[in-house]
Length: 196
Picture 1 (tube, rainbow, N blue to C red):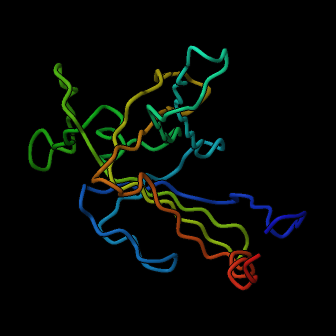
Picture 2: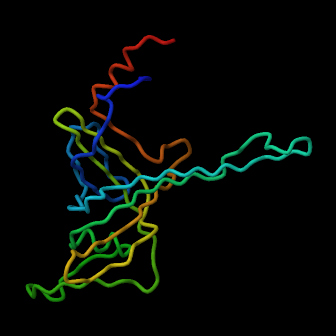
Picture 3: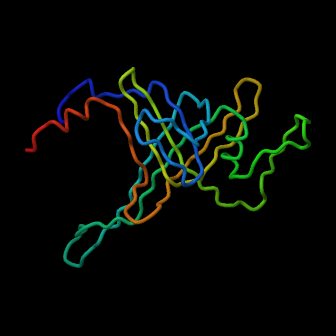
């Protein structure tokens, strides 16, 4: 609702990042379990940075020095975060697919191969954050993949960080790139307001 209202200010106090295979059923609301999804665990205090960039191309005319109109030529929606845990979910997510295997049964030694020729590794992405006891937000991307990775620093004074940028991809005509699910009482006030 328009106007100043401090109750509509949201702070993503605690959250998580999840991934799933394409076609996995997303939760229907903010209370449903993330069945079939893998929680990627701890992230840095930077949390998740969401970026939406639209490219507008101008249509110029002979009769005017300013554009007569614009057309959309591109939409990019991406999610940037740094994972702090190393395991069978995070390592393949960072490096582009594949799996972690035990070198020999019962050996306790595991192997992960980074492929010389990259393959497409499309996934679903889920984000969730809470603000207090009453407010919960979820964001679901039905198709996308890691399109950029940060360098990994192996140092004595800091944890290993797997920094990734995950970019949403179109699925079918008219389908959204991402969907927000919100348990937030402030949206109810907008629904109750009469149309102007």
